[in-house]
Amino acid sequence: MNAAAEPRAEADRDGLPVLWHLRFSHFNEKARWALDYKGVPHRRASTLPGMHIVRAKRLYGGETFPALVLDGEAIGSSDAIIDAIERRWPQPPLYPESEIDRELALELQRYFDVELGPHIRRWFFFHQISRPGEASATMAQGFPLPARAAYRAAFPLLRLAMKRTMRLDATGAELGQRKTLAALDRIESELGLSGYLVGDRFSVADLTAAALLFPLVRPPELQCEVPPSWAEPIEQLRDSLVDRPGFRWVEEMWRRHRGVSAEVPA
Image (cartoon, rainbow, N blue to C red):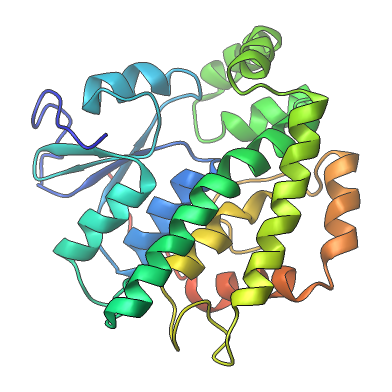
């Protein structure tokens, strides 16, 4: 969905774009990375996970973050946000110049958005919420201590809600692991001599794949706090994949292109 709700109600007083995001989220990382890669000055605003549904409905009528308020219009979904950013700030480009390459890059973005994003999330959270202290601290990071404490106290109920709404079960986790491995296969099959998925430079395809795989890879360039290790099943799979070309490629994309934040402090 790409509609405005309450135009300018959430606009920044200085006219900067405002990114409503969850601090720990791979789809939200896509939007952050795009803004930072292009050096677009912007503000960031967040809510506790779960409460973001209310804010998203108010902003654009959807239920998910990220949402970008740009010129008074709230844009939902990471792909629509990147498209708006690309049109407004075309340099450095995330869409290849060639029409054929651009279509391939967008097709790969759709593939990773659909075939990787929801599935790696189910696999990751199925295992990680077994460590409620770490999980709640990671998800509530950046908020004042009273809010974090309340979130931790409510986490048993929140965990039940996550299991229901995200369908966190053993079957979903197993499918999520298969889809994650398939995404690594796709990366390795698409990589060219340039080291990029499309053409000879970084594009939306590379950004999407690398951002959505961060729960597995846990790159040091992450701009959010994470524990030193994940739950054991996640670490076991991670350890088995660290020498795969696709895994090393994700690490390289983060090292080479993640850069610094373009967020302007409030």
